[in-house]
Length: 219
Image (tube, rainbow, N blue to C red):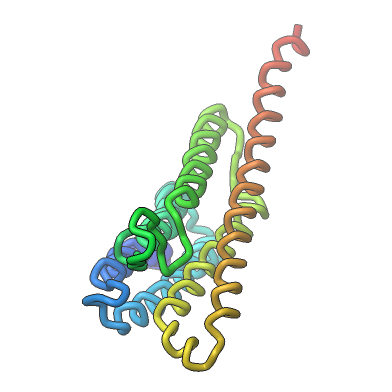
């Protein structure tokens, strides 16, 4: 019975991701979007984070870790994070500016090149992990990867709050401080994403150097 609980939580998180993206798709800044869409999205993302912690914790506690969790759990994490940043850089959150017709900005502060960096990092690490574990070497998550995931998730929540309550922030005179905090979170997330990706690159280089050196040492 217990064996299936962690996997069920992982599968439930994938379902939550679908609902989360539906909320972001139905919302439109200064358009058809109801603020409650983002409130629901915020709550769903928080629940997804809790299930992310629980499925790993329970799998380790009950010693039921398996291939499904090893593959699907990080996959769902990537879907949630990358999907969120894609939406944040998309048309749903575009700020209309009649004075700059050829300049496109978003209320989220996220732009397409940031999404490219996040996506490139994930694809690169996934490729390294596949090649290394295919060679029988464990290429599990390191501290930098967990720190990256934490900052990315926190930034997503910060952006949701900023966008949804910007009018109240302006009324209170806190919008400038909130914008600076939002930008700080975004830029810190990008920096940690690049840094953590670099740590995996060095691990991969060390692995391949060791692999290339082995025949010589044996000879």
